[in-house]
Amino acid sequence: MVLLLGFAALFLAFSNGANDNFKGFATIWGADALPYRRALILATVATVLGGLASVVLAEGLASQFSGKGLVGDDLASQPRFALAVATGAAATVILATRLGFPISTTHALVGGLVGAGVALSEESIDLANLGSGFVTPLLVSPFMSAGLGVSFYALFRFFKRRHPGDIPAETPLARGMHLLSASSICFARGVNDAPKLAALLIGTQLLDGAQAALGVTVAMGIGGWLLSRRVAETMSYKINRLDHVQGITANLVTAALVLGASRIGLPVSTTHVSVGSIIGTGAGAGTLDKQVVASVLGSWVLTLPISAAIALVIGLML
Image 1 (tube, one colour):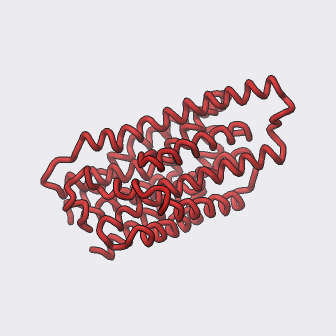
Image 2 (cartoon, rainbow, N blue to C red):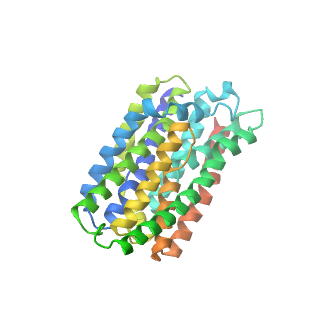
C-alpha cells in the first residue's frame, strides 16, 4: 500500500507538471517572444526552484492538504485514504492534459479528498471547512485575477496613450520584463503546488517535508518537460492572442495573487488565477475567443466531480 501510494503521489506530481509547468510562459510563447523549447526550459527551471523554496515559504499548505480537518485525523493518516485521493486527482489531471485543458490540480485534489472521505470515513465531511478553507478561495481567485487583469491593463493602456514613447511594446526592456514576470509565475506555482502534493506523502509519514517536496518537485519538472505542449497551445494561442503589455499584466497579477495566497496558506489554483488574468487582459483588449473560454470553464466545472467520483470508486475498492 505504501509503495502504491508513493507511485500515485509522484504520478500526480508528474501530471501536475504536465498541466501546469508552462502556464507562466504561455504569455511568452503567445506573444512570440521565445520559441516553445526555450520557453519550456525556463519554465521548468523556475518551477523546480519554486518547488524547492516551498519547504520554507509554504509549509502551511502541506498540513492543509493532508485532509486533516476535512476528515478525521485517523483517516487522514492512512495510506489507503491518500492513495484514493492521489489516484482520483492524478487520473483527472492527466486526462485533461491529454485533451489540452488547463485545469486546476488543487481543484482535483479537493475532489479527491471529498470522494475518498465519503468512501472511507464513517463520519461526515466537515462541510464548513470544505467551504471556507477550500471552495471559497478556489471560486474567488479567478474572478479576482480577471478583475485585476482588466484594471491593470486599462491602466497600462491609459499610461501608454499619455506617454506613447515610454513603454513601447517591442523593446528589449519590455521583453525582459515579460520574461521576469513569466519566471515569477512558474516560481510561484512551484511554491504553491509542491507542498499540496507533498502532503500526500507527509501525512502517512512516508517521507519528511523536505524529502517529499524534493520528490514531487522532480516529478513536476519531468511531467512538464514531456507533456506540456497541448495545454501550452490552448493558453498561448487559443484563449487570447497576447502582446507584451497584456502578457506582463497577466503574469504580474498571477504571481502576486499566488505568492500571497501561498504565504497565508490559502489553496488558490495557479491555473484559475493565471487563466483568469489572461481572460481579464483579453477582455480589456477585445481579443478573447469566447468559445474556447467557455470550453475551459466547462472543464473547470467538471474537475471536482470527476476527481471525487474516481477517488470514491478507488476508496470503495480499498
